[in-house]
Length: 288
Image 1 (tube, helix red, strand yellow):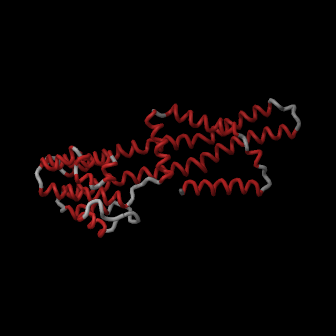
Image 2 (spheres, rainbow, N blue to C red; image 1 turned 90 degrees about the vertical axis):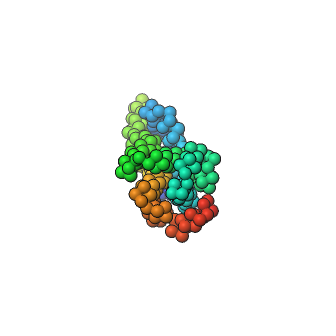
Image 3 (tube, helix red, strand yellow; image 1 turned 60 degrees about the vertical axis):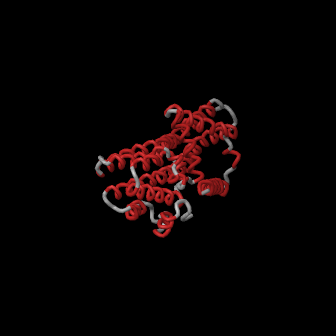
């Protein structure tokens, strides 16, 4: 919603200011300039990226518009799931724990945390490190290094499409100049036309420069920033899991280990201690 509101404000101020200065909107109606700039930008994006990144770019733009970041329910599901697993690690046999991590889709613990189960990368991350804890040979600092490396890899993969979109955004001003030059070439081809005709052709050419700069700085860059925020916040769940399991491996009881994970959540998004305690007693039915 913020993206749409911001775009409307931007368009309104730019065009409103232009009209207030006496500018005519008809001059800005140059669809083929937009075809040149947008087409060259998208074409370059396709040439520069594999199909997977192209598809993910479309997906992440949709996530940015919907602002698909973890909500309190996601954090509570994650913390509640970790609590149940850590509690079972202390009280149940290895075979019983392995049944949960080998088939999370059939595990009552995972089924009580639907947002975690729906996030395949997160559920796999949790299952993999619970297995390592069950084995019992890995030291906490070795697990921490492995987690850091995996989160770094996940971050690189999640933000690859963002970096590609930034590159395309940075190219738009230069592509706008290309469109403007083509327009000037067209105008020079009509140099013998009357001044009013020639002036219209030159004005149309300069619209290319305007569109290139506008698309870059007023559309793509704000959108790219929102994309980065969304993907970075999605990775926060992995940090919560990391800090919780490391605290448990270092000797903390499950309740205290959860607090290590809870504290990694931004203060304005962090569930309260009471909400987490309610989640421990009633998995899947705690906070909102």
